Image: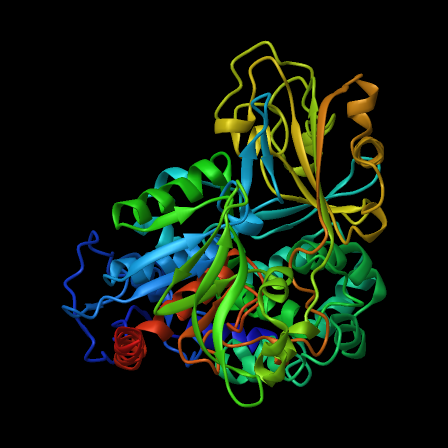
Length: 594
């Protein structure tokens, strides 16, 4: 049955159609884009129904161009955005491009939110997590193209997902197939992987290839129908669905758990089937979806700086070290909020000020929005349901070595090209020339489900002459590490690195520097039943909006999810231009009369 679906898919015609143009409100006028012309087809687009546009690569072009409307003369609204993470900055990009007066407030001393990075006093680049760009990040890629960050900011990796097991053995999903794409290359990857034994491979095929129980098969010819079935699986865990469909426990433990940890920071026994199957559907239908890229260097330099430059050129003011203390708002007779006037904010010197805005946007993560919302907002069910969402604790560990840890003694046995001696550091090994595995790495045998050698994968700022690997390991979930001191966390992580790469210990490679960043709440926990608690970007308060990867968009909590939410938030504001302008006029008239 799966083979017949492959034949049907291969017979589909591929094209790139026109991008839909949203209706324009009279408080905005059409705009001739000044962005460089988008390619006619950034990627292939299938002629299949896709109402939520998860497959629509034209979104790259749309995000590249920006909004096709601009504030009408005399209707320029003042917009305040709380939070300068990726969602907030993307929202600000579109609203400033549309001609609005935008000001942002960020509590930290740097922008980026969960994608933050910074430089410590010794010149080391520190990250809040390991950031990987999947090929289906169509919206984010469009944003990066708009600010000039795509071509020079990302490094393309081999089309293989590599698993490192205890003892230094390698298993992988190798999607390379001489130009043959999805879903055939995926079938080949699972059939040939050494990460699963033959019994687990058969069970895996039964679970994922059954057209009756698996929505992925339906999605090959009816994407919307498959996605509807995926959404209906939000109330069960992936393990419940997978094992109930014939999948094996061995497949979960050796293959799917590391992937679940990498995607949502929780294992298959706790993650929603919807979350996992959403990604699988994209991988099955789109060849490029499973392709990985990583930043040339730090996110601060190669992602955030181009966006900040873009915003600054358009007059956006970004206030750092500015913590919002209060949302200023009106209430009805029951004490429920009806309108937001602005914010009360304190700067780094603890000086408080009041900022008035026509539109206020909360671009926060889950713990941030809970802190920001006044208690009386919970009188409104829309806001109260947000408190059902909780974040997953994560610890990101960086370990610098005096040699190249991921250069295995038998690289050729795993189809990996040897790059030289693991102890060779006295040569120019910049620009990814160093020994080791230049890719994202997964493991089923360590507390860090995914990791990478940033000196190889992102060498522009993480490679240091005369030094070796810089492993960045993500401990998920990190509940048991939250109360542990950072030195102990680094040591335990190092011990597990040596278990995965015994050749590193045998050759005497030593850790020369370490850093640990603990985040009590990171991605929201995508356990069963949580999807219904994700709020939309428009709220019951007409001039108050939300952005953030936890808000509803038909994808997972991720950089692409944050981008989608920011674009959706800006679209909601622009679509309400008349109403918001009218509210602003009413407020001005009331203040004038007073």
